[in-house]
Amino acid sequence: MSDDIRAILKEHGRLAVDVAALSDEADLYQAGMTSHASVNVMLALESRFDVEFPDRMLRRGVFESVASIRTALEELAVGR
Amino acid sequence: MKHPLEVGIDLVRLTEIEASLRLFGERFVGRVFTTGETEDCGRHPHLRVARLATRLAAKEATFKVLRPTPRDPLPWSAVEVRLTRGGAPELVLHGNAARLARRRKLTSLALSLSHEGDYATAVVVGLRSSTRGSPS
Image (tube, rainbow over all chains, first blue to last red; front, side):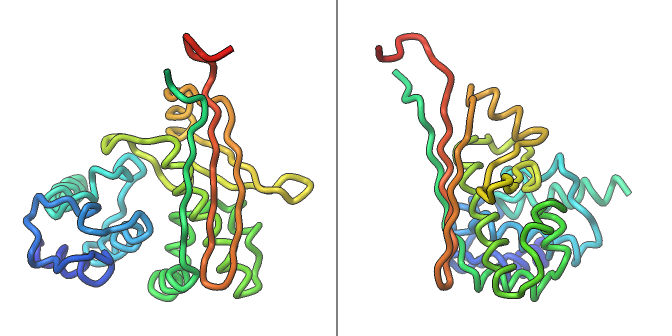
């Protein structure tokens, strides 16, 4: 799952650094991801993992790191 | 002493909106903009992109005024740009956006939009209610 998340971040996150150089806990916004880019990341994650982020998950903390994204996706998978 | 005004500004590139539309189509529009905003943006291709871009900038500028924490859910549609009868843009806050405004004691928000070439921008000024020790 983390590899897929990183691939999506590489394509859509508009990061200022190579995503491969970031730890799972690294702050993606500090790494250059804008709020608009986070929209594209969210939509790409929804397509890739066949989920929909509910409004309660549309908060900065969900998309701020690879680890937080993975946790959110795992929660959505369990909830199905 | 806290300043009574809060200001937010944002800049959006039209080419990035075009890219989002190309990649995600109406899913992008549906997740970020309300039905009213989509109707206000119309159908003319270039004008629609410019208007969507200014509205996205307005939402981001408003978020900067509202200052949500990483734990505060704040869907993009919770901040809505509507047009007055005279055609001027104004902000309408819904759900958690309205709650955040109350939490920050913001009594009114003023909005201005602009676009030129590949750029769209929005400025939001929030007025906070009187606090103890405000200047005479």
